[in-house]
Length: 551
Image 1: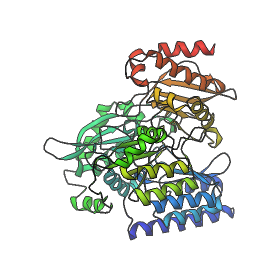
Image 2: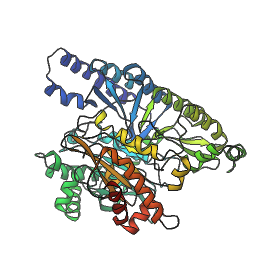
Image 3: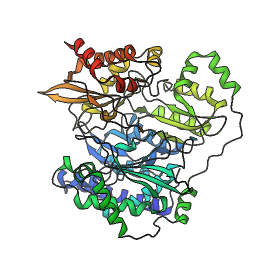
Image 4: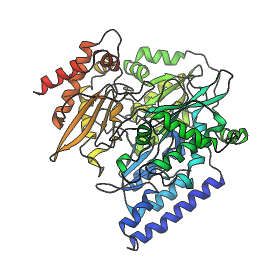
């Protein structure tokens, strides 16, 4: 991962000292809450239902063991002993005291971390493929480009007060693990026939009140022109973006209003003003690339005898390997995905002890490398197959060995009404009830890949629009109801889900999901996934089954 230099560290120290003074003024009564709000949001601090919430940036989802241990320590010292990993690859602490916040920022800065640009109308944390640098699928390591964009966008004066928050994702593999097509800007690394590296540029995706799949406005952008083209996009957005209506202020609304073709024309016209000069020189890119510690891979046989013996001897271990181990680009290695979706627990939560355990594993077996996924799990990207039995045993001891990656209980859920002042309904308990329905691992594997995503309000922090089954909490005269959608996808085949029918009361949701799954098992042909079956049959058989049960 990127290693901070003196300039980075001085900036974080200065920012932390500045916020300490602002917090002091607020506690002394010299600032009202209205005056303080924009200052705290610039430092990732939200005021939620019960306490302050601090959102910590994890750029492109990359952590080292020292940083994860520091997050664990902060959770124990200043929170209730845990943290919540989010769909932006960040971490949130939900029980923070205002007076403690400056000290927390100092502790974060001591390990090259911060909460800058995790809130506000600016370019937020840039997300990237959590398998970056480990998968053979990728054209290039997207973290290098994400880091270049982080340095370009951090505190950029022209883009610190945009019409609305702004989100960028980058992927370099055919399999999209970033939901790039539902971001304000999605970048897909491409290589031209002549070998030149560049990007497909997708603009205008997003969820929330009005979901859109982004449109490709440039099939191939030369890599060394990246910054000027991004600036052209943001300038067109800054020029035309609605500032009088927060619901219509996102770039997706502008692209839809102008049309993708006209928006692209205006971006190209703005870009031409810059001229054809290179804006990301090879020397600067090399500097950033060089700041990433190169993985040191041993020459290993493709098959590990210890690993194969463990699979044959332990059915639970074999199940974990089937679902949580992904192919690595180097023989003898694997990518281990760690589920934070143990049945009965809060999706995305990790206790301080669990964070410490993962940090220990990364240090001992994983080349000091940890990733956060946008699906609220963790990844050890470089694990020797020989070490997998020991890694599994340690994960099992830490209650982190759930073998359910991409299965029905691997549910994305926002904090919902249990924490968030914007939410209309609970998300966590709905996710827990659904997961209990599929606690039998044999049944879960029979169902296969099924992505359930839950949001407690229309802001869609749980990505419900692009769930194979999406669940949105709504308020009906003070009661919690839930709208279900089917057929969404946040992957390379991105799609917005289709409404199933009238919203269901809280106590009917888990049963409805159970019915949807049973309908899929009855309707599917061959090896179809849930999403494949829905796309073939349409909504009718699912709707008929659910509402027959409800009524």
